[in-house]
Amino acid sequence: MLRNLLVYTSLATLLACQSNHSETKETSESATANAATASEEEGWENLFDGKTTKGWHTYGKDSIGKAWKVQDGTLHLDASNKKDWQTSEGGDIVTDQTFEDFHLKLDWKVAPNGNSGIMFYVQEDPAKYEYAWQTAPEMQVLDNAGHPDAKIVKHRAGDLYDLITSSPETVKPAGEWNHAEIISNNGALEFYLNGTKVVSTTMWDDNWKALIAGSKFKDMPGFGTFKSGRIALQDHGDNVWYRNIRIKRLDEAASDAAKTDAN
Image (cartoon, rainbow, N blue to C red; front, side, top):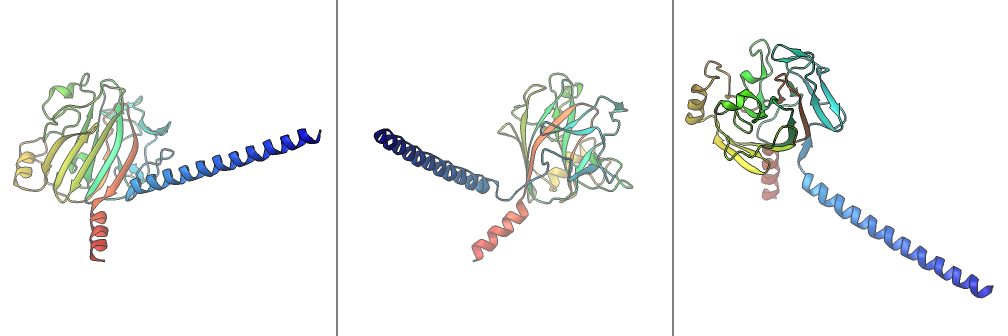
């Protein structure tokens, strides 16, 4: 009996040690993973928390339209109730914050035959500019296989809308997620779609002005002239989903780097 008790006690002690070792290992691995994540995320700001529409409002209004819904960690425009070419209680939405030089990352998917867009440097002045797109350059979001806009040069997914054609075309079919990045840094503009650079240009120089002069925006004097503004997601009357919306202020990052070098 005593022998069995000793064996049982030894086994219990061994198992407790193994359990403690396992817990210590898991805690250490978790801490390492969290540290790596913190390092990767340094300087990045979430523009969408996956749970609320906090940080966004409809262009020219104080709140956000009910057609923009949070569903399963996505920001979804429910376009079931159309109003002209947009959505009832929808409209283009813009960030509460404004940005200068930035690196924007997000995922998007669009319904079959869908159309939307990611705009930047939006000037929110409804008395002067009725729509966000009257001042803001745009990365086109589109179902290339189904929407009629895809037949127009510079209107396809990934294009700098009506200004520069994206190349190569890397967009995925309607209903599938695409990863988009927009980098604007001291006039240098780059678009990435699904990991590939598809547009590269310089803003505000003579070539930029010529691009605008040859586009549908030629009679909009404020278009593409601003060096800071809001980020916008477009309501074009079609179902679209966005998620993982993050931004990094490059002007602040550069400033912090300069301070570090100086020290």
